[in-house]
Length: 341
Image (cartoon, rainbow, N blue to C red; front, side, top):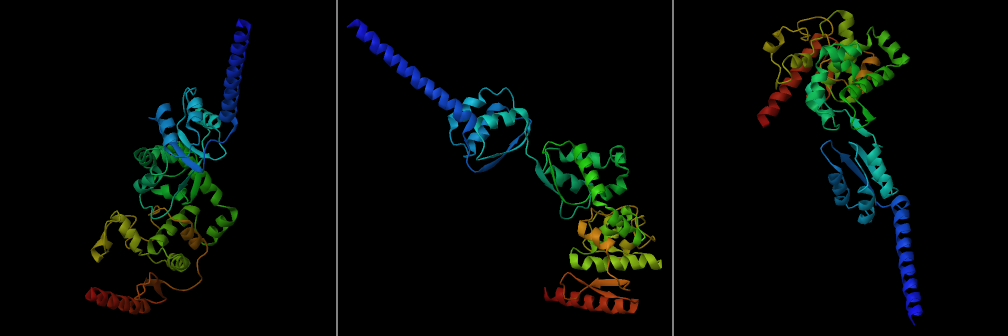
């Protein structure tokens, strides 16, 4: 009888061990091989986050299929690396823990678009998308020692930046970000584009300066080659550019309207006072404006003013008399519009 009891106990223990072993094997397999996430999620690990906070963020996402699996592997992780990580439905718990521990980051898209008129605006746009602090970025962008490494001075800052979408690590340092800008700028200036600039009698930097003025005049891309041609015609005939955006730049873009008194500001950027191009771009010109300067329209226009229909476009003129007529038409329409309001 006792022997029978011992046999039963032994069988029961063996059964329990088998179940326990089976469960352990299943957990080990599931933790390492089985996908434990649904959908796709973007995880940002900040410098101040510890392992517990990172685990809580994963749990709170609603993307974890089996919480116990993730907890099992995360408790053995010694540390996590700061960074941006993309976790999708192919990831196991073990893969995610290793990803976070070893810093297998997923690059982010850094997009520069819209009006970028000052280093401060540039810094805020970068800082809003990257880990780097916007104040540190602005300081770097306005430091002659930092910028001189790229063969430019502060006035030429925007000649080295081509607005675009850049894929890079979220944790990239400020210098790494600007290194990337410089690399992409060099790649953008192909032999073909350099030859187009030469045909216009401009250096690549001068193309950027003029493109910034064109962009300041109109964001209507189809019209930019016509605007570019007007300014090139003025340069080629020895006229002053007389570009309102350069005056706005002299007043830090704080003017609601440019008056005659503003045209008297003594600045090398005031193209109403000085001939030729200003010493640097007045904004960061987009690709469309750069291409407009490289491939301008062919016409003999020297003047343009806003269209009286307020459609965001311009009327062009070859003579000053024609220009005055267009200007009067616009002023009349503007007066009537203001009265209507």
